Length: 211
Image (cartoon, rainbow, N blue to C red; front, side, top):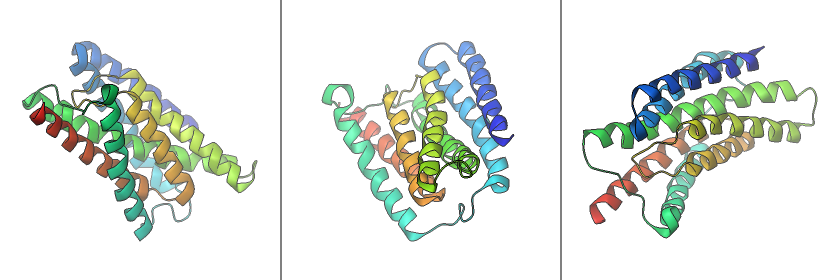
């Protein structure tokens, strides 16, 4: 069953990520573990999505770009203002370490998890629920499954020098799943993840400079 393959990829990704996090102590290990886990599940999503996609799921439309850019710009700003009790997000340091953990890690985490959860998992769950539920509830159920799948990796790996609180990628996963359920296309959530991460990284760099 395709959903079982996706679940297995998630378990394997978390297991490999945990091994990496043990090898590197502290926030660095957790961030690297999250990157590895995201790469495992993201690669699974890329490999299988073309085969198990919904009709029109890979189509790109102007509204996908518009809403991806607008929501991706607004969501991290609102979250950044209130992060840490109303403070601005900030990198732990401007060094080679932050280039990897503060810039690369958030991009890999959000983009790869979006491809896996809002792409592959949503499509598989939607296909599985369609014969059993009305179309609206099939979308809702698939969105819940996708958001849950997205949240697992961030909850296991909570280290990040970009200043991103653990709740933020979880909430982002919910937003991406809703986007996928409303549009039944994947490019909107992917654009959302890229813009969201770009704005957050910029805010974190600015927070460090202005601190």
